[in-house]
Length: 185
Image 1 (spheres, one colour):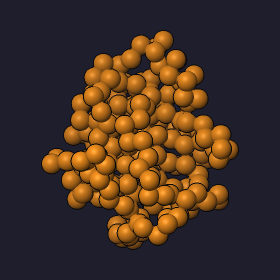
Image 2 (tube, one colour):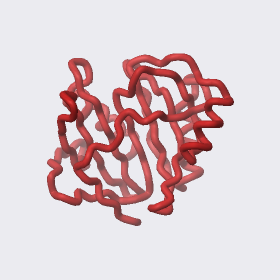
Image 3 (cartoon, rainbow, N blue to C red):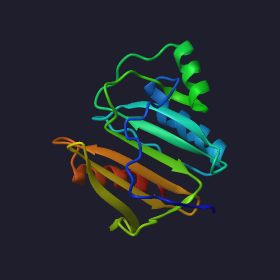
Image 4 (cartoon, helix red, strand yellow):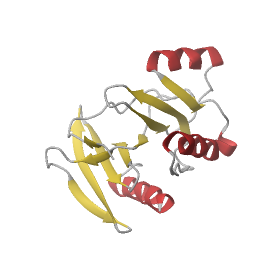
């Protein structure tokens, strides 16, 4: 497995994600396409209080790989037109699997790729959830609190970026990560 350093720099949290099916079977379709892409099962949970607004496969040319990016928001708006989604795919060099729904901002995103993550600068703390070491970093940017985390599996890594607030707390973020861990075993 390739290795990639997960640095302490804030990754763009409010990325526009992409998608093209309805939520009824959204996770199944996303998981099926991810398994086809990566050759392994990938966990994509639904969280009732944070609807999924997009899922896409993004080409990472510098790493010669692809990652699955799933965005969740507090509210799901209107589905973008097929034409707008096609433009997005072309500009982002991605394949939309689900969505893209309009929203004011993302509350958090989850990504999966085949690359093992390591803490490059040693600034990450570790919390063990269900026997899995989750490496995380909390940061403040522009008066907003963020939590970035990752954990490795035998076949790849899951990364998370949360915009914390009164409803989406640090504890809730770790519960959601725990859900993904439970589904990925």
